[in-house]
Image (cartoon, rainbow, N blue to C red):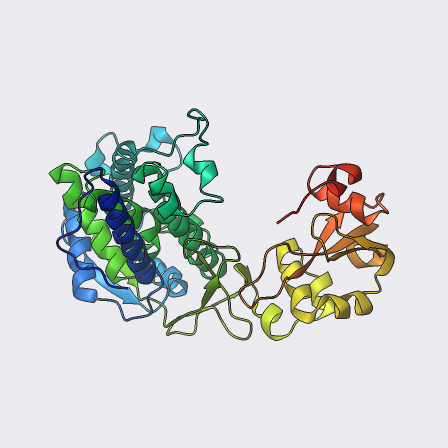
Length: 418
């Protein structure tokens, strides 16, 4: 959704104006989410102009630009340009006394950190104290729609944390940014040019503050507004980037991004997912696979086997691979033995099944509790999932209670879990 850049409504405290501001904020949030997940070619002129402006603020001359097809291509380019990317100094005693003596990447990181600190001070977080008989919005938001919250008298500032800040943070910071770093740049933080800036995936904080400023809820001084506009322009126009002394390496945006709605999402939250192909793909073939928001190796999507599952040290990757081949198939091929089954008190109509895991499978005696998720998946189904529980538990209800820090008797009294 595209929102006009001019004429943003201003919040004047009236109910009708609050609803107009909320609608505008949601539209602008979705616009920023669109920038973050964009697969369009980078707008190189806009990105280079904004980056040149940031270099200028850092007291550095305009850089030479090197464009690369993906973050995975950064490491060899940074090595080629190594003199421009000095290794970070690890001890304060070794740092230059003057700011102008710092590497340009350090100066830019300092500018960004200081700007975000100032912006955050101007944006009040939702209140966490009960006021009379009304719970704080942070609690009410779990069951109350934002529009109803406005009608009930909750401040627009508070509501924007759940309609703008939360969805962008969940969808981006916990999503593609983490997955791409894990899959494509696992070692850049310890090699030359280790300071990475995330371009379009910085929209989680930029979008939040853009909404606050454009609604007039947190106006910024001219100097901060000018700097913020430069960071925003980079996020709208390019992918990840690595600033060096005299040269700036900038990645193109991906050519494919696949997401699905987060189960139970009420504010447009999404997560990376594709069941048959990469969830993120770049023009040079760099790929990120993800199942229901969890970054996984390629084999989990394309060639999952019980043998590979048992050789995988990461418990989340193992879980995804098991769900990929199906729990029934895994239980049969891995030789898990059913100890007991019982109706799930926290999820009426569903069954808990507790299995014994042979020592040869995970290297130690264990138990797996197979349960059904309380939330509905985007395709309308309820996902089956397994939980590792201590080997001494033989009752499925007690195992379910243990996963919540409860006894079996306490869990049996739950109305419904999620």
